[in-house]
Image 1 (tube, rainbow, N blue to C red):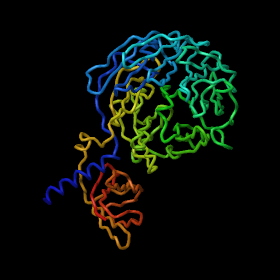
Image 2: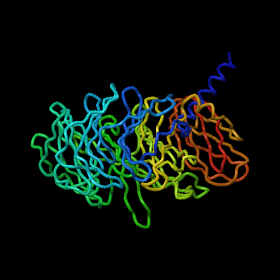
Image 3: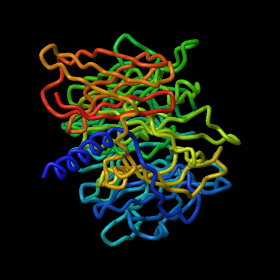
Image 4: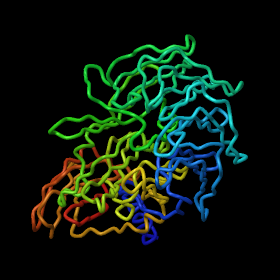
Length: 491
């Protein structure tokens, strides 16, 4: 009986450690052709579909590809028109509207056409034309079931449009406050929307925020910057990907987005912020991402690719985002690293590098599957002309397959819990001197302690304040200098 309990406990410890230790790469079938700047959507049957984009040589596409985990290949379907840099909105009945896009290869021209994709029948149907040809614009489903489309690129962006699915009609709005492209369009409960960020139709970042009022069909200025009394924050839905649907970025009634700021000689600062769409209260959520690195000892910096293409696990309340590993470039290709941020504990998990997928850039399609895995589909090697078809899954290491790869190995690590004095006495020997990371996990898989420790060659004795640790079972991980030690303890 004791032996069985010990085995169960070790499995529990492995599971606890695995939940926060990174991601395991899983191979999935390639797309039928390389695609860049696609639109993508998770469908009700848990399949994922990518729409259009442009293929190698910067050639616009009129096909979509659909795949479900376990299938041997992506299924290709022809759309009613070419859709590169179009807008995408999921309607109330789960049909997906695709609007506008490039009218020619090499990113030239705009389209007025629209179409609806029905996942149940797997069919595309042409719908009414917009009043203005548009590309690099964004849309959102309003609370009343109508869709608002805002913006344009190298064309008139002074008027937005509202689509009525019941009558299949587009109607123009009154003029916007600021003409823009690639902005966020965030619906509000009063049938209105928040329009924020993006570029001007001819380039140049926009920081301002404006509001759309459905009753008057008009726009009004809210403020000129993302945060009050602080300018310089840039945020848009283009780089690295324009696959933005507001419902994919919402949790507990708030929307989550990302922004960056050029601080001159101090480098670029990245952050994730939240916005309450009704009160329009904007708050920073993650502000220290610029300081993170993948391997400090190798001087292996991460150049974050934070933008609209980060993903939210709404069940676990986590945000996943990609970083470009600037010191892993080979022939101009970016190495990728994937980070996890826990909204509840406010912890950023150290990244997992995907070196064998150095050609993957986050301007392909992607989503979080219902089982919590992250799917990445398509992207480019170096430029708009070399889109690739490669796909993979990043599996957070709390699955059975991932657990099997984690080994409990104390490597000279010993822990003595002094409950009366609220102290953990940690002994670690045989180490190389340097900065190490100490993490402590509880049985829920939550990291309850994360700190840096300076260790020396030989035997190290460290005392850690444990006053904030409840009674129970924990797992400690000490990592650094190409070595990791893990050990369980009971407090």
